[in-house]
Image (cartoon, rainbow, N blue to C red; front, side, top):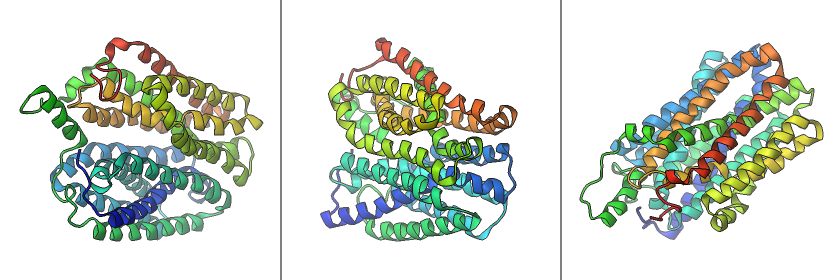
Length: 417
């Protein structure tokens, strides 16, 4: 990996700007669920129409993930990061000047896709920007969690009509403008950003090949990745988990309002508890991963978090407060499972495998949300929402089976042999 040669003062300034951007992105990602009741009333939408909003946003996710890093290899990390910020801002600007449902969908496609790609690009750029990229990256994702939680608590409890949608996005647009101008200025001339860069997979490959005494990297084959048994287990684990976690973000707010009769302020408490605790857990439980190892910590948190998650849904009422505990316990699942990919794939294609797995697992989000609105209309909110704890249990079961199949591992720890 590259090592940052950026001055300390520039690193601090970049950190502040990127923290502002990450908080704005976190808030932006949460707004679909926060404003679902407003969209429903303003556009006279059915549950299927609300599903379409979420489905289109995840299609944007898939397209941007598949294409973004390949484009960055050709045009450079800095250029693609700036252009992607501009695309995200353009989507927000479209919300301010239109009152059309189709244009709202187009905006959702670009806003969610660009937000996801910015997260990935930040991962790739961090070694060239910061002297301690791992620590900085974790704290930046922590600030993103603050943005998500703030949107679900403060904003969700106070919005009343479509004007609020425009006010919130106008504020995020201003923050984005500050971030893009500042980043473009501060990042000029930083080595590693302004030319076509190899992905982190290629960087890992260089060290791997040096150890093997090879001259060139084996060609990364998508077929080789997809044929690996570990690919299919990880695809199912991520896919089911995405349905369960993203269901809290996108559907719990309107479920509690429409299905349980809670006020907007009362409903806002529970998703904000889940993601607020998840944000805190990623800081606190990182030490658990160090002590117990990747798979051991995943086993403990996946099983315990799933149990509490299921109880929250099944019991309901005051048990909804357990969303906070389940979010805390499940906080390490997403980042640590991504790290676990390196245990099952060779160093030269582990990062590529991670990208492919994440992109394909997004199909779960797309398929689920494409039909979820129709399911709500057919069986009602209570039965429809039971699909989320079922998905969490399925993901946990897949993980438990996968974790016991030690013969699939190429190594027992990241960096091991």
